Length: 328
Image (tube, rainbow, N blue to C red; front, side, top):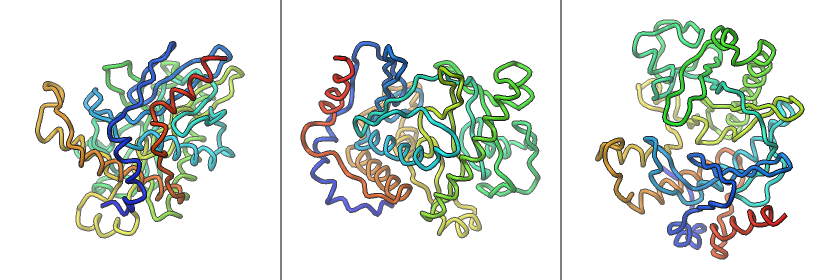
């Protein structure tokens, strides 16, 4: 349950509940959450929207979500820059990051410290199905759901095209197929494990457990390996509350987390999300999810969340910031 004081967010509630960031300027490449624009000078503008994606579709927009994700990623990049350079150049708006345009490596890196997950590529799903050999790793018998692994492991996957599913990979398959060179794989692996160790230490200071996380790497024009996208956000990572974890593990219960899946579960319990049109999500459910994101920001970073002022509307503010680049 959220511990956020709603009164200080009330002034922004009406405004952000009725609007969505939709840029659609020339040169747009739209991802599920981010709108991307490439500039002629080699920079890329990434607008982090409030869209919530699941079931291969956009379900709704969550107030503050884009600002929260951008803010946590900024905080995490600043706290890991000594371990691996990143793509960031500037933050001209709470929802915008300007970065170097990178050649994204064709392997997605997920580091896992616990036997957890719900997707078909998660180690918990595979473990429950009886598999012990996965991603080139051998896990022992007798592990409980959500139990800590003896040491964190890397579980790489392919980066599937739109509409396709990521596929598990091993180090041998990555090297044999030429997806990465041996030197690139070594560099990516070492960076990912170091970043995860830093992320776990920072989370522990805040009474949290960083159970697993995803990293994307790319090469800049000079061939330097850099972190891309976002890191250590509640969308790219699994965070648990450390104080209740031992009791819930012993009881065989799911750890307390920043449950951003509440809307996905609401939809799945009532409709076939792949075969039916999704109805309007109840406003109170959307607001509850917004408060969860705000709580995640404050717990992860240790900083107070500053909601957007009532004016100008977030959408207009973001378009104005983007207009500064398109006018150059």
